[in-house]
Amino acid sequence: SGARVRRAHNKRLPQYLERGVDVKFTDVAGLGKIRLELEEIVKFFTHGEMYRRRGVKIPGGILLCGPPGVGKTLLAKAVAGEAGVNFFSISASQFVEIYVGVGASRVRALYQEARENAPSVVFIDELDAVGRERGLIKGSGGQERDATLNQLLVCLDGFEGRGEVITIASTNRPDILDPALVRPGRFDRKIFIPKPGVIGRVEILKVHARKKPMAPDVDYMAVASMTDGMVGAELANIIEVAAIYMMREGRTEITTDDLLQAAQIEERGMLDRKERNPEMWKRVAINEAAMAVVAVNFPDLKNIEFVTISPRAGRELGYVRMKMDNMKFNAGMLSRQSLLDHITVQLAPRAADELWHGEAQLSTIWAETADNARSAARSLVLGGLSQKYYGLNNFWVKDRINDIDSEALRILDICYERAKTILEQNRGLMDAVVDNLVEKKSLTKQEFFNLVELHGNVQPMPPTI
Ligand code: ADP
Image (cartoon, rainbow, N blue to C red; front, top):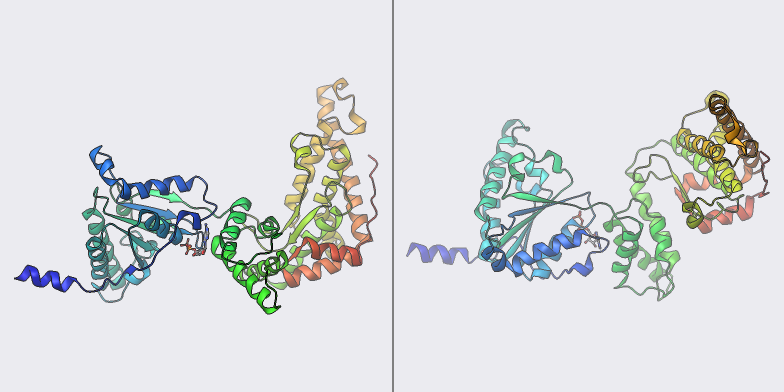
C-alpha cells in the first residue's frame, strides 16, 4: 500500500545525523552555574515522563547566546552525549538558498529525520542567519528566507511539549531574532555563555591538556593570565600549537614555554583581525611601556606579569598586568609610599607622551590613567596620609575643600616629575620595550625582565611630599 511504500522510502540514511557524538559535560570547562541549566535539559530527556506526568512544560527550543568559539556547539553535543540521544545538526547558513523552497524543504527533512530517530537533539548553528526579523531583507532572497523561517516555526510548534526532540540553536545576536522565534513554546529559553574569565581559561586549558603529554610543572595560570579575551576555541588551539613546538624540538613533554609561545602566536592571529596603523601601535606601546618601566622601580608594583598592546576585552588600549599584594590592597593597608608609587605609575603614560611626542603633539591616550592618579591623590589626602594634613579636622569646611584639592595637585605634580625622571633615566629600556611590543604585541614576564636586565637603570627613589 501507499503507506508501506512511503515508509520504505523514508528508510534512507539520515543526512543530518552526526554519528559518534561522544561529548560529556566534563569536556566543557569553565561554565560555572550554566552547567546546572544544561543538566536540566538532559533531564527533560532522561526523566521526560516525570515532567509530563506533573504537567511541567518542556521547552521546545533553547537558545545558546554568545560570541563564536565559547563552546556553544560543544555544549549542545554534550547535552546529547549525556542524555544518550541522537544529535542532528545544521548550520542555518545552509538553509539560506537562492532557490525558493530549498531552505524550507531542508528544514522539513532535518526535523523528519530527527523525529524518526527520536529522542534527539536538533542543533541549529548561527540561527540569526535565517532567524532575522522577517521583512528586513528585500527581494526574492528575503522571500526565500521568510519561507524557511516559517517552516522552522511550524516544525518547532510540532514538537511542543513532547520532549522527544529538543532544538538547541546558537546565536551571537539574540537581539535581532524574529520575535516569533522567541515566543513561548519555541525558543523560550535563553542561556548566555560569556567569554571565560581567568579561572575559566585555566580550566579550559586543563581539559585540553588531558589528552596531551604535559610537563608536570606546567604553569596554567601564567598562560591564562596572558590570554585575556580569548575563548575556548583559541585556548584549544594554543595547546595544539604548543604540541607542535614540542615535536619540532624532539622533546616528549609540553612545557610552559611552549604554551606561552603558542599563546603569542594565537594572539597575533587575533590582532590581525583588529585594524591599527603602525603609528597607533607605537603610541599604545609607549603608553604601556611607560607604566611597566616606571613600575619596576617600586617594591609593591614591580611584580609585572606581562605587558601587552593588544586590544583586550573591554579595553581599547593595552594592558600591564602587575601582581599587587591584594591582601594589603583589600584591607586598605597600602602604605603611603605604595600609594604614591601607584600614582606615579598612573602618571607615567602622560609623562611619556610629553617626553616622546612633545607638548605640542600630546594626545589623550593617557586620559584614563591620569584619572586614576587624580582620584588616588585625592583619597590619599582625604585619608590623612598626606603629611601636610594630618590635623585635617581642625580646618574650616570651606577652606578644607580648597586645601584638599591643592594638596592633591601638589602631590600629583611631585609624582609627575618623578615619573618623568625615571623615564628619562630609562630611555634605553623604554626604546627596547617599545620596539619589542610593536613587533611582538606582548611580552611575557620573562621577556620583559630580560630587557630590564639589559637596558634598565633602576634606582629606587622615594618622593618627598
Ligand atoms: P561555538 O559553537 O560557541 O562557536 P565551539 O563549540 O564550536 O564554539 O568551540 C570550538 C572548540 O573550542 C570546541 O570544539 C572545543 O575544542 C573548544 N572549546 C570551546 N569552548 C570550550 C570550553 N568551554 N571548554 C572546552 N573546550 C572548549
